[in-house]
View 1: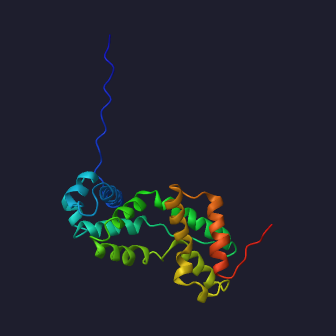
View 2: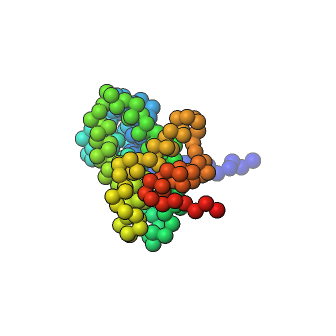
View 3: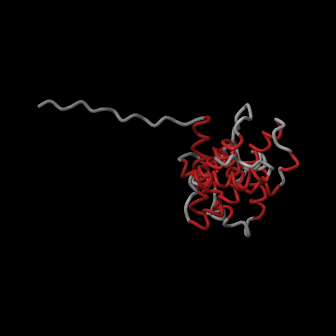
Length: 205
């Protein structure tokens, strides 16, 4: 009986450029979710990313800089309708995007950071400055500012409370129901809270 030919095991290619950066970003998000801010080290991140620690230090001076960079790159931005012709739909889609982010590695990592905000207030401040604000604020804020720029919303009505109201109600639902809101709940948030706050009453069919 002849032996079957041995299939050579492919060698693992060395990651470079974007592939390596993505692996490192994924590693730091997973690492902070597991060990917390206080346990975050370059050694732990490098081990999880299966790369040399020197590869990290060439780009980031400290683990927290790497974490903020990863969170910035992973933070989604809502892209409203170019013609600004579906405010209600764009707002609902922005809240859907928020929910998707909440259960993604970046959202889980942010919860880990927030859980330690009393011990690491400077990191939370940097999170707002270098990630949330740098990415355009809240999810619905991007939509509201887009429609205001098109002359369809009075910009003076987009107050800090109005900018936060959609996200705040999503978080309240999660806290109260221990579950993510469905599309019906998101539509109710938009119809009963966000739109009336900017002077728009949704059609009641």
